[in-house]
Image (cartoon, rainbow, N blue to C red; front, side, top):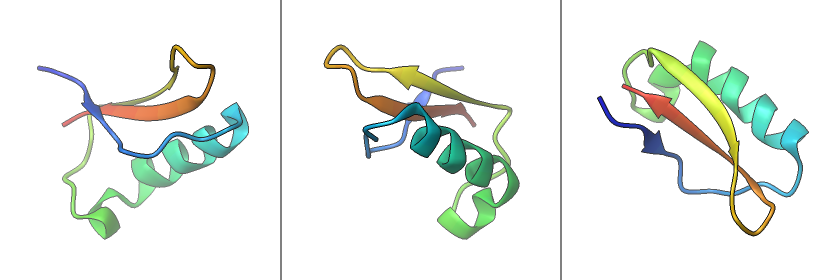
Length: 54
């Protein structure tokens, strides 16, 4: 399986972590199935994003 990257990057790890928790709990609101794993990652430019395994 491959990671699916959410399209928005956040300036702080806290913001990305809040969205990651929301994605874990309420993925159906965003039109996704239940993800197997959700992870916060850091981009090369220092911003934070969310990726998940479908």
